[in-house]
Image (tube, rainbow, N blue to C red; front, side):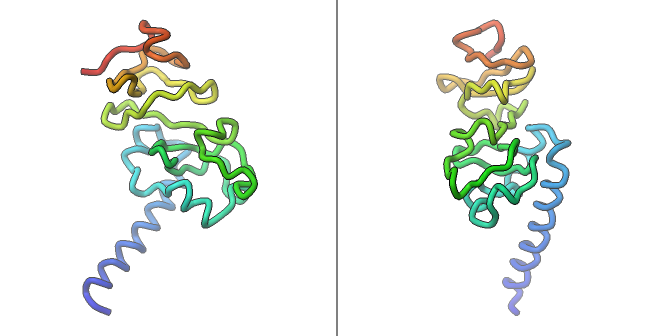
Length: 149
């Protein structure tokens, strides 16, 4: 084994172990903490290729193709229902971050409302929710959001 192969094998081994640790702790982590560990969260398609969502535990986290950290709310047959998490709101909950650098385009979701301090983008600008259970866009309810400078 070359030195390069050894380093790659070691990184793979410890990276996998750390990713498993993240999954074990995910239910107690905030959205911001999960986005901080983004590199260790599997992509949705890679997770589906490895194991059907019927076999995953509720609370399993992955990255949607749109870059959102999502949490499995309800097991389902991902071979039959092959849509992405954004298209299956009853199965997936979105995790939001209080860190503006992780802000992603706003999604209207009664299942995953924005909490106080959580960020999104709207019309190419970053906004922070001023209230809990915020399901309105910054345009629909401006008093519920503040622009992040």
